[in-house]
Structure formats: structure tokens, C-alpha cells
Length: 117
Length: 278
View (cartoon, rainbow over the protein chains, first blue to last red):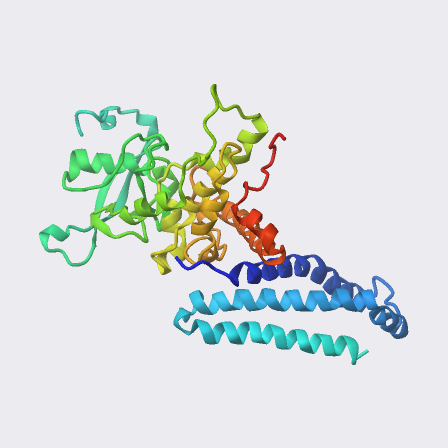
């Protein structure tokens, strides 16, 4: 039996990603996808929202959400390809593509949250 | 078998009779040269108090004595009568025929195991996996002079995981078991948790070597079918997820702690358990 060295850490990222996504994403979707468009809550004006998003703590939380949610996706998608599509013989390629995608997405999030604001 | 099993068909109980039902039973007799399993239909009385196992016993005693299947206690304790009933892993002594009326009721051998004959599967793979997780109390210290006492809270910690009857329904339900024959599987990992969570046990780190592997907990993708299938509410899927968290925490500790403290973290006493008294 091969002792797993990376898997516990990848699973922790997956697990943390699931938790933060389940906690934060529904709230964001409810606000920006339902309540603001329907006018049930008066949305903050653009400058106000921009100031909130520019606050370092907000950026840090958004960055954490992006990174963890991406690693959650990578882990789940990797196993979907392994077992759902029976591609386990391509495990190296799949792992590189999935986690590489998550790293690339995290870099993009970091860029957007710093230079983009 | 006809001598020991009460002949329930002699009991007329007319108000319970609700006609007949067809049982579509998978037959496979490789010793007769059969290469593929076939199905055979049997028309049996449909009674309110008959489980699928009673139907099989009726077939065996009155219609076709060549049918082979395992059973013993008829009360959901021995764990030997597990089969697929209409495609779902069930203890046939707990699956009532009236729930499948008007039928036909399909009865097949447990999935993910080789079939020896008819509904009898070869369980060697499971029997070889069980001892790998060291399902016994590991404690280097000499046993206490009297009894080893536990508080109700300490018993409650592991009691749920000790209810397993080794019926293997979870192995039949688990898609990972079907894909990877080396996967330790739900019952074995839940049983390891039963001992890990026991306040008398010090074997957490011994078992970690076996369980924190590709074939152990990391093979599980939390499909959850094991918990759905379990007739004793052991919740193997929950046990595995819980174990993943403690194993990942151990790995994290071994990674971040300095070497001197790491030795203690990997070889020292097991982490404190819920309800441990100082």
C-alpha cells in the first residue's frame, strides 16, 4: 500500500473549499443574483461597492474563496475523470491539468483582486 | 432444512393471504457447465409477514431444492442473507415481499463479489481486508487488574461503529469497491474507526499506516451509498469522512511541526479522544 503524501493536503483544500463555498457563495448569489436585481434590497451604489471590494480584508476573503473553491473543483473534477469517465490510467495528466487549472485560476484571481481594482 | 424451518405455508391465515407474487431469481451453476447466470421465475404465495428470505425458503422447501443461498438467523443479526433485491443490496430477512408487490421481485447475488453458485458469493476478499485494519484493542500497557471502565460518553463515541454485522451490503453498494478491488472498503474502515475512537485503544497511529493510503480512506470519494445500504445504521461514509479529517490533521502536524516534535507526533501517544479523563 502506497502511503499518500500529497492527498491529505489536497483533501484539506477540497474540504475547506467545500465549506467556504457552501457558506459564502449562496449569500453572494442571493444578494447579487436575486435580491438586488428584483429590487427587494436597495443595492449599494457602484462607488460604495468598489470601496468595499478595495478594502484589504475583503480582497483577502474573496481571494481565499476563489483559491479554495478552485481547489475544491480541481479535486472533484479529477475524481470525476478518474472514476466517472474511467480515465485513471491518465492520472498524471489529469492531476496536472486539474490542479494546474486551480493554480492558474488562483493567479488570475490574485491579479484581478490587486491590479484590477 | 425443511425439518428445521417451520412450514409457514401450513398456516392458512386467510386474511393475510393476498394472492401470489413472482420471484425472479438469478441462477448460476458453473459446476454444471453454465458460463453465464440466468434467471428463473418462481410463483410463490404473497403473505404480509413473509420477507424475501421466506420466499426463498418456500422455493427451496417446496418448489426447487437445487436453489443455493446463505441464511441463518432470520432476524437481521447474522449478516449472511445479503442479496440484491430489485437491484438494491438488502438483508433478505428484512425485505418484505408486500413492499415489492405486485412484483416480480428480482433477487440477485450481491454485486462486487464473485459468484460461487446461484445467490452465494465468494467473500474471501472481504475476509482478507478486515484484519488489515487491526480491528482489536491495541494497548502496550499491561491490562488493568480489574475491568477497564469507560464512561457512557466514552462508549457512545464508538458504539455506533461497533454495530456492524459484516453483511457486506456496503461493499455491494460502493461503486469504488466495484472499480478498485484493493480498496479496503466501508465496513473495514468503519471498524478501524470503532477501535480508534475507543478510549482503551492506543492503536490510532498503527492503523494510520494502513488507512491513510490510496487503498484506504483516500480511495473513498464520499458517494455515500454504503450508509444508505447499511441495515444497522453504522454510517460508514461518515466514519470515513471523520477519519479523513483526523488523518489530514496528522499529516499537517507532521509537516509543520519541527523534527524534534514531529517524532513525538508520529510515535507518541495517540491524540486525546472525546471524553478522555486526564
